[in-house]
Structures are given as C-alpha cells and as structure tokens.
Amino acid sequence: MSSKSSADPRARATWRWGGAIAFLLVAQSLVLAGLFWLLASGAHRRESERSFQQDCSAFAHLAGTLRRSELREALTRDIHRNRFLALFARDGSLIAGNVAALPAATVVGAASFVAAVRPTELPGKDSDVARIAVCAMPDGARLLTGVDLDDSQEALRVIEQSLVFGLLPGVLLAIGIGLFAGRRAAQQVDAVRALTERIVAGDLERRLPVGENPDSFGLLCAHINTMLDRIEALVVEMRGVGDDIAHQLRTPLTRLRARIERGLRDLGNPSSKATADASLAEIDQLLGIVAALLRIRELGDHARRSRFAAVDLGRLAQDACDLHLPTAEDRGMTLTCVVESNGVVEGDASLLMEALSNLIDNAMKFGPPGGRVTVTVRKDRGSIVIAVADEGDGVPVGERALVTQRFYRGRHDCEGAGLGLSLVKAIAELHGFTLRFADTGSTASLVGPAPAV
Image (cartoon, rainbow, N blue to C red; front, side, top):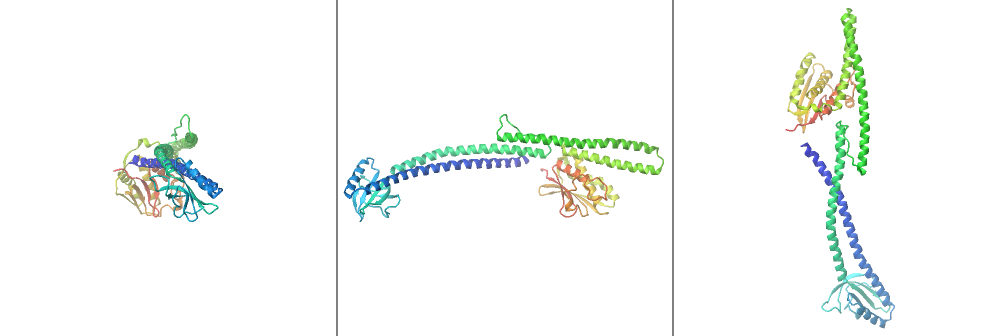
C-alpha cells in the first residue's frame, strides 16, 4: 500500500514534467508553423499590391488613347491569363479590358481586396475570384487591376498540407522528447527526495550517484555529496564528544560508588552512614543520567531497527498498566487501561514499553494526589493512538516545545533529570510515531500510522 502511494506522486510528477516540456515544444512548433504560413500568404499579397501600384502609376501617366493600346498589349503579354485589367468610364461602363463590370461596393483608391469578377476572355468561365485594386485616372476614368487567386490558393494549400504533414511527426517527436525529458527530470528530483528522506531517517551514509562525465545535475549531486560528507563528519565528531563525556563520567562515578560501598561496611556512625547513603543515591542518579544520554544517542542512531518485530500495542498497554498498578495503589491513585482497538506494529517491545512507562510515570507524578490515570489504545482516522491522561492541568502550551528537550524540567519540585520525555520522543521517532499533547487537558499521546489489517 505504501509503495503504491509513493509511486503515484512519482508518476504524477513524471507526467507534469513531461507534459510541460511537450507542451512547450508543441507550442513552439505551432507558432513557427503559423508564422511561416502568415509570411507565405503575406508575401503573395505584398507582391500583388506592388504590381497594382505599378499599374496605377504607369497608366496614370499615359494619355487616354494610349491607355487602351497599352492595356491590350499588357493582356497580350499575359500568356497564363492570370491578370485582370480593365478601364471603366465615370458611369462604370467598360472602355477596354477583360473584366465585364466593376465589382459591387468597390472603393476607388482603397487597399486591395478579394472579390468575385466576371472575366470576358476566359472561355467557359463567367466568374472568378481575384485580388483587385481600383484606382482613379486623371481624366476621371477608373482602372481595375487584379490577379487571379487560383494559383496562389493552390500554393497556399500545398503549404498548408506540407505544414500539417510536417507538424504531425514534429508533435509526436515533441511529446516523446517531453515525456523522456520529464521522466529523466522527475527521476533526478526523486533521487534527491529519496536521499533526503533517508537522511532525515538517520542514514547519513547515503550518497547520490555521479557519472564519469557529469552534467549540471551531476555536478550538483557531487556538491551535495561533499556537503553530506562534511555533515556526517561533524555529526560523528559530536557523537564522539558526547560518548566520551558519558564514558568519562561513568567510570569515575562507578569507582566512587564502589569505594563508598566498601567504606560504608566499616562505618558504625549512623550519621556517617546516612551521608554515605545520600551520596550513593546522588551517584545513582548521575549514573542514570549518563545511561539515559547514551540510550538517547543510540536511538538517534537508529541502531535498533534491525531488532524490530511484531508488537501488539493493546497487550503492551495492558502490561504497562499491570507493571505500574502497585505504584499507583501506593500513591492512592487509580490506574485504568482501556483497549478500544488492538494494533500490531513493527517495533521494539522493550523500547515502546519504556516510552509508555515514562508517560504513565509522569502522569502519576504530575497528576493530582488520589487522582485517576487512564491509558487508552484506539484508532483515530487512520492512525493508532496510545494516550495517557491524568486529571491535572497538563503541560502549558508555552512549554510543549521545551519539555522534550534534554534536561528541561518544567517543575523543580519533582524528582528527575528532565530526560524522560526526551527519551519518549526519541523512541517515538524511531518507530515512526509522534508525541502529541492535547490542546486542553493533560493527555499525552503516541500517534502513529494504523497497521494494515
């Protein structure tokens, strides 16, 4: 179930990256094709309009009698019969040319336009579509000059077909390249994401692969690996310092305790014996602090994952309540265990028992005298929850981020070194649980993913 949920985001990321790149490539191809088509169609129009301007200028400088002969000679030179030339009088009657009449709604002197004309010298054809322009002559006559659009439209159709046939493989290639590039980019990003997840989980030995001839991403991976090497060295150095301090403290304290025990057997003075007993109790407390520090460091190293096995949380909670029931009775408190839902998780039973015991011990220590402590195991919206509640005020909101720090003690009138909740938090994180405090009341909970049924 978890592999499927982790695969879906990677698949979606691949489609997002690939779709974005493919969209950009397809859009680029379409824009280039559109620009080419516009340039091709515009080039024919511009060429036609230059020809119209030349005709209007040339015929305007000719006398009226010469215009007819020049017009006839121009039509004679048009062996392909794709030109239209005609002179019209003021009243619109035809003077000379190969167009029977002016098209409707003709504007003299305006830009060229496309209209239907009636040719007079094309056998079997009484209508044609042409791009024409109409200009005024000095004597009031009007000159119609135009060009047949059959050839240009055929050329544009060929261009359109070429673009369509060229775009199809281009679009397919763009989609293929986009998906390939998107998949590669998603894999690279996913490799970094997986590495960061492993580092957050405590595995500082993982590194990103770097090829022999790295690209920009490969160089970035190399820099990340160098950074991780430095971080790992610093973490190892800090752990070494902490271990050295703990071991250096434990050895002389153990020797001191043994020396006091030997001397205690030879003492007959009751006051000396009381002083020695107090010294032993203080040393035991210091040794407990050292042991707790070493235990938290071991949990932060995630060294105990290899010993994980199936743990029944319901049975674990019941055993913890049975273990603390005599202490609760001695303090005049009521300890109740409510198992609403069993759940089997992978973990270390002794560590989970230690975390739960710390929470129960805190509840009995900080709860009101003669009060009730309730341990509950239940499922809540896809999570398994182990909750420990007492009848006290709970941890103040401003101290909830501090109580899980080492050596922090919210109340100095109670015994302890301030390491209990730090140990609970370390055990919870090792098992993928979260230590949470209720918004109101004094409930502390270990919340983790519900086990699969």
